[in-house]
Amino acid sequence: MNLRQVSVLLFAIVLALAVWLPIRSQPTIRSFYIAPNGNDTNPGTIEQPWASIHHAATMLKPGETVYLRGGTYEVTQQIRPHRSGTATAWITYTSYPGEQATIDANQIKVAPPSGNPPFAHDQGAFQIEGLGYIRVRNLQLRNSHNAGFTIRDSHDIELYNNTIDTTLSSGIAVWCQVEHRNNCQRFKIIGNTIVNANSHDMVFPGFSREWETPHEALTVSDIENFEVAYNSIHHSDKEGIDIKGSSRRGQVHHNYIHDLDRQGLYVDTWGKTIEDIDFHDNVVHDCRGVGLAISVENGQLAKNIQIHHNLIYNNLGTGIFFSRWGGDGAREQIQVYNNTVHHNGYGKPNPGETFYWVTGGLFLYTSNLQKIEIKNNIFSDNQAFQIGYSDRYLTDNSAIESVLQQKQIAILHNLSFTSQTFTYPIRVGWPPNDYANVRQILGAAVITDKPKFIDPKTGNFYLQPGFSGSAADSPQEHTARFDLGAFPIAAKPNLWWQSNFPPQFELP
Image 1 (cartoon, rainbow, N blue to C red):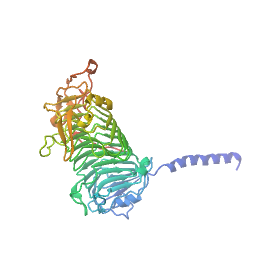
Image 2: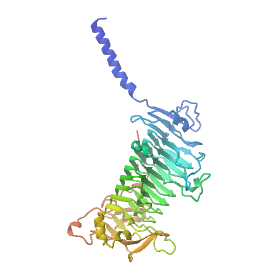
Image 3: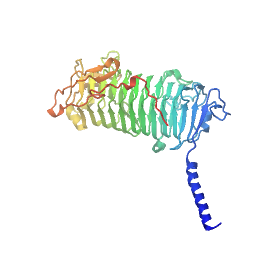
Image 4: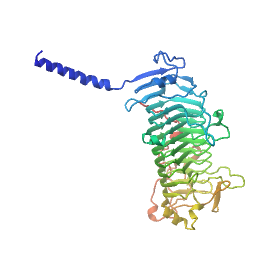
């Protein structure tokens, strides 16, 4: 073989390797199938499907998808995926297109509660722990004696268009322990339906119906970079969406929350600091608690919280509540703007009292606030007051305007309307000793006109074309037109939560 032939041969080998190696490096995309009449000794093809999700959870590798054929899968043990996917090859669990797979967790035995008072262990019927790059879509999970889906100490997890019906604890819960905090990132909880969460109907042996059920319908704790959106949460026995612990950098938007026993949306700091959370374009109504609460129960600080373009109406408690629950820690850099808060606070008072224990439109119950901005909101027909502050602001006998200026609390450009007349202060709170005297404040450049909503009885809180309120007590520079409330003035109504909700998300 001469030199020219050797050169040609070497070139051919190099060319073959250049073509072969990229092909070999690409992930293998494979699909497997599960059916109620399958068998785990089968190869998992559509013609010969597996029988159990547990078997799939032990078998799936990066880039693989398992399709659950329609039917009910009664499981007796927790479902736990064994492997992570990769950034370019996720593992997916999903119903077969056009069919509905239902996981019934009623037969899963859980450990008895422990602690003082006794508390259920934070486990899910479908538990993703210490893993990443896993997606769960279009599954129905019901009848869990603990949580539905629990994600713990993981990263890059997505739950899309799942339905969770009847759980003792959360329908969906995402947790991270402090030692794993830096790795608990990038979560999407989108398009799910949670109903009948925190239900005493799912108590297990050793758990009394008299005890409080654990957590909330959708719990997010100590994670970073997350999106909770387009979820429907209703007819459950505690809070709706709770962002708690020391979670950071999250978006909570376009969720539809109604008919809960407690508050719809909740910020609840435990540990260190919750920061950079954006609540926008949510709808909350007909909850027995408040619409949205901002608390620091057992933490240091809640910081940089944005609350805007939300519709909050017909809740028995306050529309937006700055609580003093628990340790009443500090809250700072919180912006509340362009919300519509209507007809909240009309819950039944305790015997011998005049008002529900948390009432009004926006209630500054705590005074542990700094750098708060409340502007461009509509507060209308809320019980007792539209914006109120507690007597804690006046303990040093200062004028409220001076106190708010010192704390950098700005209240301006809001519409504040009521057809009732009250003598302030009023007294609200919870027996035996958690009470406050509350006064109303209007703020600067207030508009006192009655808002002309298109049709509030059907949930249409867009303002009628041509409505323009006028500021009652402001200098000329404050009377320029500005958008009020959750919806753009003169825009075509888009009641996105009233039809085909949650939307179906198509993913790769």
